[in-house]
Length: 266
Image 1 (cartoon, rainbow, N blue to C red):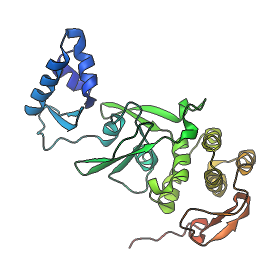
Image 2: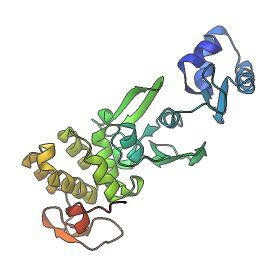
Image 3: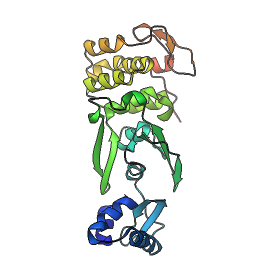
Image 4: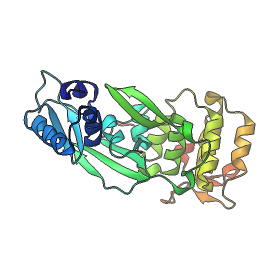
C-alpha cells in the first residue's frame, strides 16, 4: 500500500500498523522509519508521541489539524478502551464536556497530554480479567474515519459507579446516566456482580431502584443485586458525606442525591 493511500484510511495510526501495510512491498523497518520521518517533516502526518501518528488531511495545515481524542485513546495500547466519563462522552450521554480521557488497559502506562487533551490510563480490575461472557461489554464503533474501542453503556454505568472519581462525582454521574433511555439490565446486573465489589453493587442497585419506572427495572433484577450488598451500612463514598440510610442497599446517601437537588449555575 502506498503511503498516501494508507494515510487516507488511517486518521490515527501506530508505526507498527504503517510497517505492516508496507511489508508486502518489501520495505525494510529502517526504510519505514525514514519514510515516517520524511512524511512528518513534510507535514503529511503529525507525530503524537513515539510510535503514534495522526494524518494531516489534504488542504489542511499542520497547526489546524485536529486529532480525534477517541481514536487517539484507542491507539495508546493494543487493548486500550475508552471508558468512564470519556465513554459517556463518546456515547453522547455526558452532562459536561471534558478534555480528560480515561482508557482501560491491562498494561502499566503513564498519563500524557497532547494539544490540551489529557489521556489517563486505568488498569483493568483484576476481577474482570479473563471473565467469561464479558466480550460484549466492549464494542468497536466506526468514528471519524477510524474505529474506536469503547465500553458499552451498561459497562460504563457499572464502571462509573465503581470509580466515581473518574466520572466527575455523583451529580455528573446521575445527570449523565439519566440521559440514557435504555439499558440492557441483565448485562448491567451481570457486570456489577462480576466485578465482585459489594459497595459497587449497592450503588448500581440504588440508581436502578431510583429510576425503576423510567428504565422499567423489574423487581427480580433488584433482588439479585440486593443479595450482594454490604452486610453493614456504608457511606456512598469515601468522603463520608452525611445522609439517609437507604436500607435495601445499606448505603448512607446524601439527601441531595436522593432528591436530585443539584446546584444550578446562574
